[in-house]
Image (cartoon, rainbow over all chains, first blue to last red; front, side):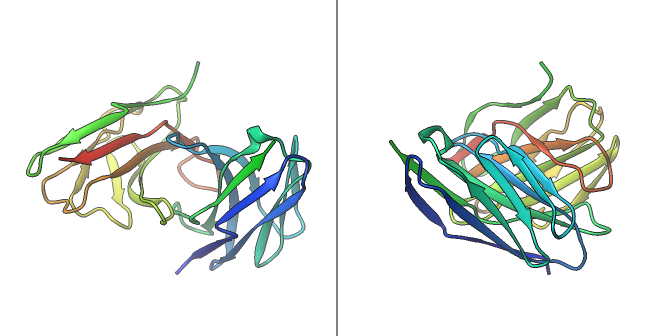
Length: 110
Length: 114
């Protein structure tokens, strides 16, 4: 069974303090790994898709990387508006289903 | 603007009642999904549809039903058989029926049993 574990569950950063969120996964053949951002009471917003180990993608202060067992979401010099829950999800080859992690709740303090 | 619209935003249901959550998309996406989100748990798939007039059960389909009569619409009915329906429900769509394409989500419906 596919599994996604995100750590830490919650993270509190000072504005400008860079850090990383972890997503560890087990899947029988990775088709894609997704990162989403979710604000309270809202639906998730798509950030990145990573397909193979070694791949990296960037968007503003966010950078996502992928290995064969885990993905990292690096946040450089975060701002308060980056506060949200970040969700990781994986899709196994040959299946439409996507398995989500519980998420990391990030709080950036001014 | 293209997107996914869920309604209502908040819904209250009495025990024993069926309720229907609306999901409409104007993105011309083939696939649509319903997820349930509970505190401390990841999103769990209820049903998904890859094409009009066809849908498949997800991991937690018991007590729910769906229809896909139009490409744009994928309503979810929460029946009285669902024993713990209070949750945040999310509808999503993706452009292709198969393959690793990202999903776009609606803003959710919060259902509360009173």
